[in-house]
Length: 318
Image (tube, rainbow, N blue to C red):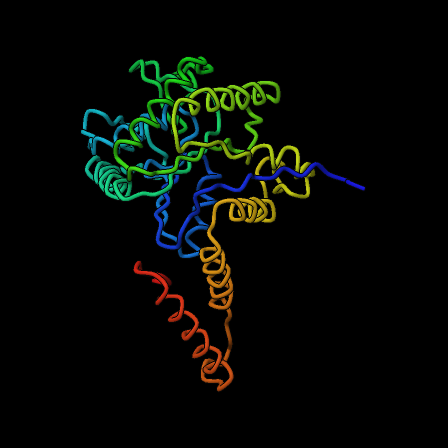
C-alpha cells in the first residue's frame, strides 16, 4: 500500500567525479546545495552575485562573468548612505564606493576563473517576477529595501524567459569546458508574498521556459527538485517554521536523491566519509588532554589524511 507519491531523479549517464568542479547560481536553495557540496569536500563555487532569483538577472550575471566585465562607479547607486549594485545581493553593500566595487569585482574575477574549468553548472530559478527601477529604467535583481514607489513589478514574458535561459546556456557553453553539463532546477521555496496563485503561475512559467529552451542543446537537463518537494514531500513537517522554506531534513533528502542520480560510486563514498568526518570534527570535550580524546583526534586526523590522498585539491582546510 502506498501513502505518498515518490518523485525520482532519473540516473544521469555522466557522473560527478571527486575532482569535478561545480558552479551553482540562483536562489537560496542553490546556496543550500552548495553548502552540502562543500561539506562533502567537492570543489564548488556559488552565487558570485549573491542570491539571485529570476532568469533575466541570472543571465545578466552569467554574461558579466563570461566577459569578466568589472563594474564601474557609475553603475552603483547610493541609498541610505550605502553604495550598492541593483544586480547584486545586499551582502555586497558598503558605505564606501571602492569597497563595494572591490567586493563585486573580486567575485567576478573568481567566478570567471572558476567557470573556465567547470564541469557542472547548476542553475536554480526562483521566480518569473522582476522589478524595474524606475529612475534608471533598469530591470534589477534586488531592491535593497529601497521604497516600493521607485519600482514597478511585473512578470517576465515567455519570450524574455526563454531568451534568458537560451543566452545563459550559450555563454556557459562558451566559457566552460567543452563537455560541461548544465542542470536546471526550480526552487521549491514558495514566494507567498507574491500571492499563492501568482506563485504557481510564476513557477509554471519557469518550468515551461526551461523545457522549451533546453531542447535546443545537448548536455542540458531539468531536475525535478520543485516536484520532489511539492509532490513527494507534501507535508509541512518538511518545512521550517515559516512554512515556506524546506527544512534540513528535506534538503538532505533532495541531496541524497541528487547524489543517487549524479554521483559516481567513488564520489558517493568520498562524500559519505567526509560527512562523517565533519560531524566528528564538531565533537568537543572539557578536557582536551584526556588520553581518550587525544586518541580520538589522532584517529580522526588519520581518516582526514586518507581522504586527502584521494584528491588533488585541498580539503578540510580551515
